[in-house]
Image (cartoon, rainbow, N blue to C red; front, side, top):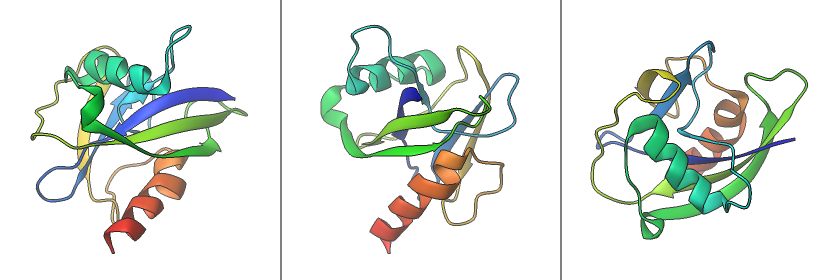
Length: 131
């Protein structure tokens, strides 16, 4: 099991920010693995700053769930993701750390190859809340 935290950012057109890390093919939410003793919330805040250069405050994030899915980039592993939504001003993400590409995608018709966590669990959950 691989534990991670991730954040869902939406733009004014209701598209969701996804990132592709160097050496991988699938897009995922900004986020990553905790450091020793770090909470899921603190992990989300730190990883977003490292990956896309956006400084967040805890009050801007709301946990929407904990999801298990096949890991996108580590065969025979399961990812356990604590997923948050961002409620704040419009962001202008910049590629940093290991990020190779950014893409704003429509949750109901993504035009990139998504990690199983997004495609099979989180996007269906957030789409059902919007409907």
